[in-house]
Length: 311
Image (cartoon, rainbow, N blue to C red; front, top):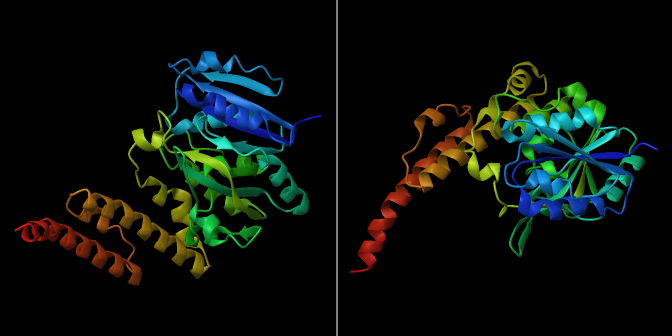
């Protein structure tokens, strides 16, 4: 019998976390699965460690050179997956034991669904925090969503908390293997949602995003804004007849731009007017522009205030 789920895990220099991540998959209460581990040319002993896991459900693959963001490695996993449904778990993150059982029930109860996601905990040491989407919709068991919701709700999807039909992600074009060091998953989910019949979010956290892991791309690679201006997203903005969707995308772009610019302001840098010029002109842009300058003024006055109070 073919497995119901293929779980795809790229591995690049994650030796301290492999036991935790891999065992969280193998110990699922729903056992009809295969775990595809792709060593992405690790140099820290991870490749050797992978051979220690003896389970007939494991399929071990390898690449000769690491790829940016692990996207190429995930595509290798997709190509070798035998299940109808695909999940993705990074080698330093973790699942609760009931993930696949819960997802399987949602799939059985909703025959048109092609993409299922769920909540997660952001963890550091013993501290864990539920994602904002889970907190906002905590009174709902499941929530159907569309592309517009994706741009207006708090972050809906994260790589370690998603299950997608294999035919959908193949139809949508899989992960981009060039042009992205970060943000390629965002582009992929947009392409999937454009084509999917139905998307469902399970409104409870079942994954753990460990932010204190070694060799994290979010720490090693600076965030770029390429994901805001992909050809697919720009095409939607130009061609959609849904004014609400277009407005949601423009506001989402503005919000992300503001966050990047404001973060630099808080680190003591001047306002980046090159990025400011990319704001989509609307009422929101005027508000964000004003907030940036108020933050800059307040921060510039803060040392003076401290000096005055100390005399």
